[in-house]
Length: 548
Image 1: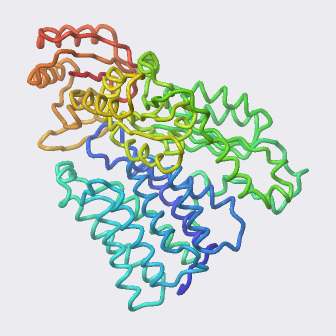
Image 2: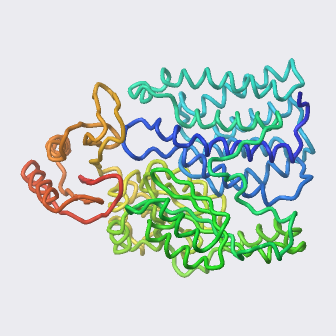
């Protein structure tokens, strides 16, 4: 029986929650509505929670619950990835605000804090959708409040919340029309319940270990001296998988250069922890597997000193703020864009984007990733082009974290972002540009061609793994056994918009012969449009077709 949650206990609960979501992220990713290789809800929630876990590991014992909650909420805000990660950060932000200045929390206070988190999330989301993580968290919180009125046992309160949340999760497939078409429950809601279950297990004295032993990623220096440190640098990074090289090959390379090696991977990324004397060689090799998403290198000998251990939290906070200090203003307007593929990055650079963040489907950047580029842009007003519907909320979170004026243009695809940049006038006002760029993205229709990652039934379509899929403006348009059959369906659909311009962005693996056929077919089907082809190099989608 647990009647009180202290800061140290809350820390253990959040560490458990982070490990639990890490262990189940692949299962959550597979709940994506369309059976395309872009499911990233589990990955986003895991990376978001890991930001809180990392920050709490650096904290000293004996925290008040308010301080532990604040540390977690701040880290979650900066580390939030994707819509699910942002909503998760909002749930914890409201939770932390309710516990302001509290030493510890009893059952009613804990239930009320969960409820405050839900209210915070609902207020922040512009158009709250039911049948999502919001519904699951709301009904779980209501059950927690009811249980707290009759029981002082916080374990019982959390058990009841999880039970109600599971009932709500099962019903999401009936409430949310999109989920009903796909026959799946809400991925974010399921991820949230895994986190709550991990937290409950901490109340019971259990420790959840992430696959690969990630709960022990941070070195514990309390039990040994500096002479026991074999290798100097603790090196951690995440690399996006974009080559044929495998994680076992990377592990074999790392074993030659260090110890304490943890290599955890899924279909999209490889996450690595290694102690080494040559982090440069490690990162150089990592780049042969794909682009680096995050990097952290720490000198363990320096960290060992008592003074550094004592001041870790203060120093890290100061370093983070210094790293994110905005550069001096040199112009009125600037632009930061998120995109995937070397060709797409070149297009955005040529159009005048100040800074590019490599990301998109399967690799949503965090709010802090976006914030860093915003603060490196020497402009009074910075436009952000998310170019993905799952990145818009993370971009919006940056507004509260910088002195720069931020305007998020809600572009949901890279072709929309390109059109926004074509409308951008660096000599105009921020207001005129916001209007022009927003109008530009509204005129763009985006068709995508990819392949099915799994067998599925969606909206009457029987889909087999390996089938080719055509999406138009986020709706499943057609399925086929070959790319060119889909092009005919896309051409017919786009012709209805009477576009003046068609741009075909070729992705990874698109061969030149097929691409020429795609160009010829679309030109013939929409003869009045000016058709061009650009090498985008984007992953996931072999072709992106922009109609405007």
